[in-house]
Length: 228
View 1 (tube, rainbow, N blue to C red):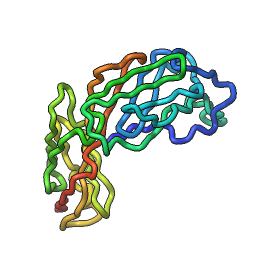
View 2: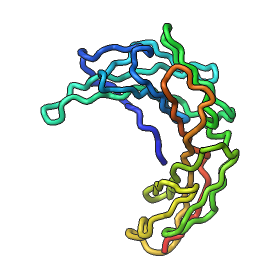
View 3: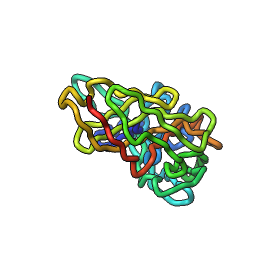
View 4: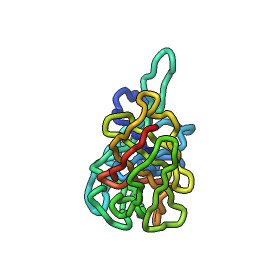
């Protein structure tokens, strides 16, 4: 499952980083999932610290502020790094809106994003009740949205390490030996979920582009895993 990795901690930014509001960011792109949001931009121009007060509202409810960014202090070995920026919020697993409205604002600029299919519960996901190590796993999904498919499939045994595989045509292949290297024969109980994308942006006003995925279903579907 490909989860968007936003910076969890922004400690270490230097005081020498330039501070930027939304309108100052060069070639900005908004990226997100059902529980996280971030802004990417052309860091060849500079590495910015996001100005305080960039608020995020989802479906009319405030979920927090975009924070972070700027140069790290670095070390003698790897020098400075440009930190990401963003926020995480309570996931949209309890929502089932076909279109999710997202507003970023800093008092001077307002970005409006309308993302279709971001709420995981707006999807109906069909997964097999049983899978086998070394076999294929096919996933069905509704509604059918143009260009949207299964990016990856995650199979998580209750008592073993998860298996994550990129999907092709909504199908992934479970690598032979993935679990049986440590144990032979038998069955494992587990769960299966998928990452869907790229989700259509019905509106992306403000940033140069928008890119979103969602992870569904919740709770994840149950599955029995056969080990050769």
